[in-house]
Image (tube, rainbow, N blue to C red; front, side, top):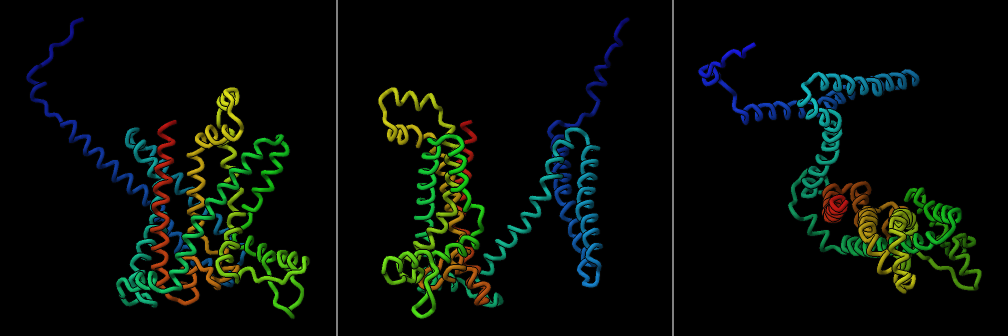
Length: 384
């Protein structure tokens, strides 16, 4: 059986599509499908929002409200994603592989962009507005923040918080993690559980607990029920209004956040300590190093990246804290911080422009810390 001859002229004259142009067209089509798939769910959820308006009727039966919310909300979203999955599966393999991540992760990114990026931009614009948010005042709000004592005190206190609280929480957490690692297994679990327990309490709940520790009653208003003042009076001293003592009152408030975050630092650092190779520790001991030298020269360098991550995480939390100050003192007696002052300006004084300006300053202060954290995380991933 012979192979038929190939017509060379036909090969030459047959039109062909350039590879680059075809690839470009295919890539453009895939990107269009990706964008559309990412916008499908947010668009349908908007329709769901309008469809749920009838559920707000006061005379509507509660069981009917719950049933409709479950059927339309949960069932509708499930059906929507199921339908999208079927459509993506019907695409060619290459196009489907490129569109599928956008079909499932894209809607979340779009919604996050709407609920995070838009408010951030709007807040930045509002920071140049007046109290009512209707008149443009330029940099007047920022000028007030860096010239008036009320806001300067808040900035000073916030800086003190972000310097002292993460340092104390990481240091105490590292000490607890190291000591707990030396305990028997059951004792270690019990000790870590007790130290970690405060983290399960909200900031407001913790503030209420510590209110009974710092509570002060002036003379003639009954017995001292605060634990600290009860101890002072028991030893014959005079009760102290702990939260009114200048400068020290800020330290007393910082203790609450340190108490809450120490458990978090301990758990993460304890896991990092356990990951240090035991052979390396034993080798250093055989070479004559004492326990302090082993800890300082072997353990600390081995968990340095984890310490940085824990420190930056607590640092971000400290920048944003307002609950403790808001509940304990309301920012009085020189205890205000930027986050608490922002909430006060927004919701107590109805000063939208100033509140937005404080929010922008808080955002600018947090962003570099996030960037450092992300870079450290990428460096760790690159070395694995």
